[in-house]
Picture 1 (tube, rainbow, N blue to C red):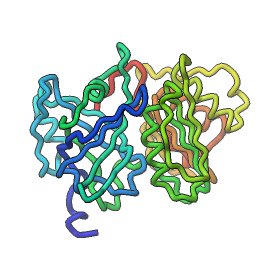
Picture 2 (picture 1 turned 90 degrees about the vertical axis):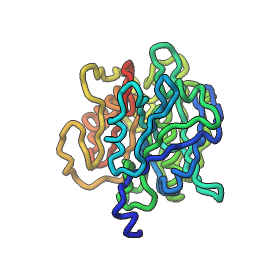
Picture 3 (picture 1 turned 90 degrees about the horizontal axis):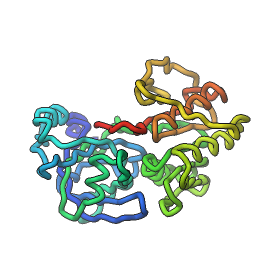
Picture 4 (picture 1 turned 45 degrees about the horizontal axis):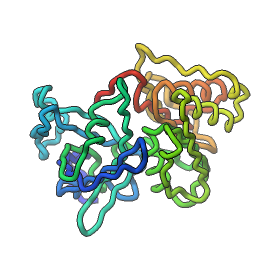
Length: 313
């Protein structure tokens, strides 16, 4: 790694242009971004579940002017008057492609368009066209600190990946970047069977898609996972944790959003990565850690969004 890479900010602030828009299923739209600012964005083959920030235009449709050269992209964003700065949301990269034509970043957007559920990201993605622009913030290529990546199975011999449609792109990227000898299971709950999308998973990983249809969010995912783990109560009534007035869960083997002691024992034979709606994730956390006795050092629980709450940032 060059001295320049080590000393520069770990993040790239890029003005990204839409190169293609594909409605890949009823509830997913895949947007491909390009542009010169992306040439140093991300490390191909080492993306996994890395988080990126997207800044969508405000009501005027005009992106704010941000300073690409500053180390403080966040300060540059906050310096813009609120009504002019647009909306920022967090996403995962579905794929990062580097070719002769340059670097392209592909993002899968979930289209939450029902009244009361939609937001600026879904609205933007539903109407996006070639040539549209937004700001993108993500890890700089070649850095060893691997900014924003939570997936860290270490030397565990198998993994279990669990999530809803908002976590599907990260699960897909994890599996496609993982060593081909990886073993494990993935459970992905999506709105409909038409939302099942191809994933180039290692041969040793079974991917199970769970279309929920008219069922409530999480009520196909939770019992399926618990039944797989041998929870005797999995067949009973599932009560999803009510998070009203609480922060979203974010607990990994090395970080606790609630301040828990993370100096736990070494991870066991299986590593768990669980993400999606925060009430569903919290419910699974309670069952795995409290009921099944799975060590915190084996699990990453991440609330990506919260039912009934408009997410910011």
